[in-house]
Image 1 (cartoon, rainbow, N blue to C red):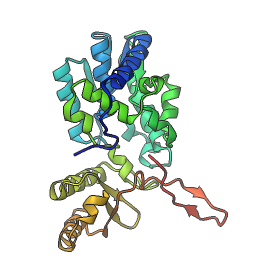
Image 2 (cartoon, rainbow, N blue to C red):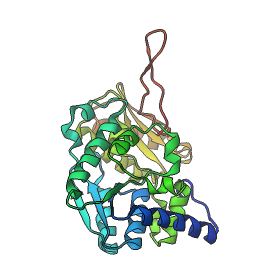
Image 3 (tube, helix red, strand yellow):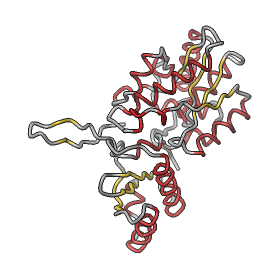
Image 4 (tube, rainbow, N blue to C red):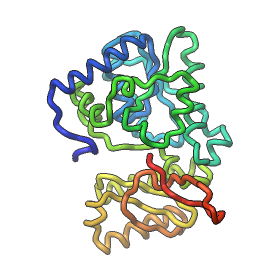
Length: 293
C-alpha cells in the first residue's frame, strides 16, 4: 500500500537530497536524535549514525501516548544498525498542563521531552539535539516547535530543505524497507479532543480500538477520536466507501462496548480533527475548528 507522498523520484534527485542532509549533519557534529518511531525520525537517525558512527546517540521516550509498536520498531532498527539507544521516560504525564489537554498541549510534551534529553546527554559536551521535523511541518500549527527553539533543537531536514516525500525517498535509498512507507502516526494523545483530560487508560482504549478496526478492515488510515459527546472512528475515503451496512453495525456495536456504551460514529478521516483552535467568536461561543496537524 502506498504511503502519502510516495512517488518514484529520479535517483540523482534523491542523492542530492541525501547529500544536502549530510552537509547539515556534518556541520552540526555530535548529536542526540529524538526518535519517535515514525519514518521521519527513524530515517534521520539512520542517516546520522551512518554518516557519523560513534558521534550520534538516539533517545526514544516511552509513555502511554506512544504505541508499543513504535517502541518495538525503534529497538529493532537500533539493533540492526548498531545505534547507541537510550529509552527514557520524558515525564509529560506528571505535568498538569499536559494532562489538561490545552490547545498547546504539544508544547508541554516537547518541553518535557527535550528537558529529559538534555539531562541525559549532559555529560556529552557539545552534543546537539536533533528532531525529525521536515519542511512540510512548518506550515502547520505545531506548538512543539516553540519548545524546540527554547531548547536549541536543530531540524536537519528543514535546514536541508527536505519535505515529507523526500524523507520517504531517502528512507528507500537507505534500504529501510517498510519504514519508508509507514503512514503518519501522531501520538495517541492527539486523538483526544482539545479540553478533554488526557488519561492513560483512555489512550489504551483508543489504541485497542484502532488496532481492532485495522485488523477488521485493513484501512489505509484509521483514527479513533474521543469527543465530548461520542467516539468517532475516521477512515480513509476508499475504506469508508467500501464499508457494508452490516459491517458498520458490527463495528459500532463492538466499539461501543469497548468505550462503556458510548455513542460511536464512523466518519471520513480529517487530519487533526480532534484538535480545536478554541478561538472565541464575537458571539462569545467557541469556534471548534479543527486545525491542521
